[in-house]
Length: 418
Image (cartoon, rainbow, N blue to C red; front, side, top):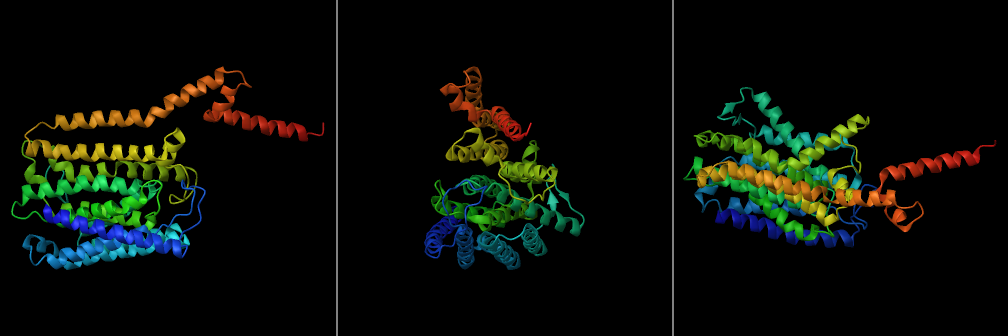
């Protein structure tokens, strides 16, 4: 554990230092785009933080490789260097595409093609979904099915993470919480399956990604001085998906099932729990855009974080709500593994944690609606020209729509020659 923590700190320190450098260079040479209609921030902000995160992770990987000779368990991760090179090569490709998009605004087909190419490189070099722990180990018989599942999963996660990147500190914090839980799971799981070797590729990727998020978050906290951009969001999605997929190739959780069947499902459940909010936002966005006859990758201002702001949450509150949902889902799933295996407790305690956590998150999320409804009722009950009605009229969308229609009708009447 200590070595993972040290490597994570290296990733954090390098990312923080390079983030400061990128921030200063971006302002010196005005490397920031204009504010778009869907953006929440109101001042031009550099979007090149993903470069610092990538370099922080690469340098931490390099340090791990250099010291692996002195730590034989760590050396096992680098026994197949082609996989490491493929992961870092795919990360470089996706960061390059993200930077190009942040500067020149690439079309969605070019970005999607680059994502498939990066995911294909990782799958080609052997990081694939070889089996699914469905109460046991269910092998995937076809190599083509394995490759296609891997590529699809990586591209899906990359876009899901990128879709929620709209508020200061949102993606970095969600990834920090989710990958922290996933790191603990993979580290504890490998202790059960391979007591003599606590090191595996999934844990290393998760630890370095946690470090990169920790190092970047100080500059990305509201009000953000630096954004990670598409380069950072796609990088996080790529590495999160890769670490989850690596578990299926290196760890067999079937041996943990015993009397408790649920822990054997955690390699499937936990990645989805960590990505609960991004995947939900991604699914809603795709459905919304296809229903409107638009490209599923066209931009709009109807993501979940936009809706939280429209409900009345402040910027900080909206981000913390995302953190809360992610923490409840990821920590709750982690408890399904930790409680029975390490403490001999029933998984009902984990279920109770999730149920209570979800209720609390739901109440906090929906709290502004009750206040808003009260203001709407007050507005509707007040005389038409009173201060109370004017102050809260903007909170009533139906009243706004009615007023807009009245204005149109009045305009049409005034132009009628009769």
